[in-house]
Amino acid sequence: MQKKRKFFIMTASIGEGHSQAARAIAETIKQVHPDDAVRVLDFLSRDVLSIDHVLKESYLKMIRIFPEMYDSLYSNSQNRHLGTTFQSLLSWSFRKRMKRLITVLKPDALLFTHPFPACAANLLKKEGDINTPLLGVITDFDIHQLWVYKHLDVYCVPSEDLARSPVQKR
Image (cartoon, rainbow, N blue to C red; front, side, top):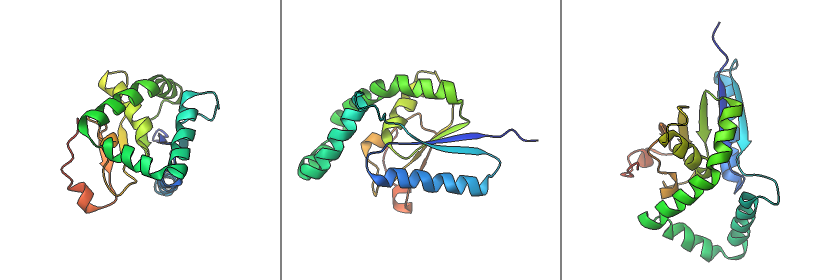
């Protein structure tokens, strides 16, 4: 008898599209592999005193109240230097939580529909702390720099054009 595999799909409750994609992937895995376990996890804390909750709420308010500011930050974070700095800050901020989750959950694979948890897993894999297969699922119409990680094993993209994109892994 084959061992029951455990798949965890990590998203972030910043915008509904990432969460909807995660649920759709979970349903498909359940249909194709009914004997395996699959679960969607919101990587961001719901604890109102946590830094990531403050980050999430600030992000959502900025989109609603100052959409031009969000557009500017999104565009500027595509700049290689600024984007790399932002990636490093996020990776180190979320590193401990990701390591704890992997230690407790013991996943056979991690799938990401948001770049925040992906950045932390990438850092852990880079450091040799994990060897779990990591899969990034791009839910946007382009590949933002915050999605480009050298230690993610596979990317799924929504179009053939993006699959041919010249984005280089770091």
